[in-house]
Length: 438
Image (cartoon, rainbow, N blue to C red; front, side, top):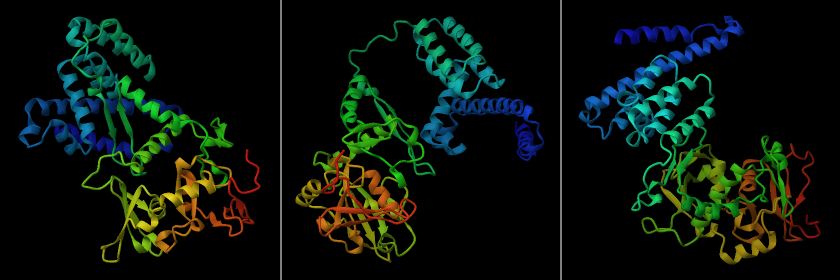
């Protein structure tokens, strides 16, 4: 097998160096199909090796806690992916050899094999084995004629035909026992995937809390005109005079974040280590002030830019840990940066929500932003504070929008950057005195 791998390695190198510009356009589809078939055959070899590792107990003999963990370390993937590979490998080797053969021949992919196993394996104990094998063979014939969605539907229809009654109900089992929530590691782009399952009752509780927060009406705009490049094509609605161009998935994500912020701002969450739970951002004083280049660090995440750290340090739900030149903590969540309750109430009365021109998101969705950052000596009083929603809070930190409180009216005013208004004329807040409220 080692000799075959060496041949494959050399062939893969030649294929990677092939001058594709010489290939006729009409031949590209055929070549892509050929590469895909070869990849499926290699996936089959990988799964067969993993099944052999599991059969021999190699992982446990090496001191690993499971074959999935061992596989993850050997091939350099996540533990969850390692467990998934082991589950598919053992199922194909022991219970679904026809699917394993189809994968080895390049006729199906790992995606098809995983879904076929996922739907047929649970019904195997309750259905005649010959019927399951017949169903497997029929589904394999559909791979070439159905797209991915059609194949999933065919699998579901086959299970319904094989086992119309389903598993016997377990009076002792609480459906919530099967609830699961997973948050992946951060991608290089600083994003995480959130996935999971909830029983109907748990989902109803979560949706009841999220839907009021996800209702259209609060703006979530980007630089310039207040909207990103994708949002222009998204239908929007009017509520409270504000245009909301966010799609439903974005609004639900924002609602989940708002729900978490409400929890952090309350006294209802359990304490950890004798302290209220809070987000922690660690950054050096000179980076926070913008004097030195550098980044900050989140307690549950990776590095964040200095601009993001300054924005987070404004929020009462975030505890900044400011370090000196030698790395010693100079300041941990100074009280003077946190807006007292009375000042917050006065700020809500004055700004009536996000003060950014044309916004007006509800006060509960807003942060008290220090116009002159507290790290630069800015005071925590009404003359140096303004309510901003999350999107406009990020905008003011990431762009050159200027903010000041008009000494005559006591209301905030905003100066756009030159790419928005070459003359950089000051604009009134969304609820400035004398302004028409829409």
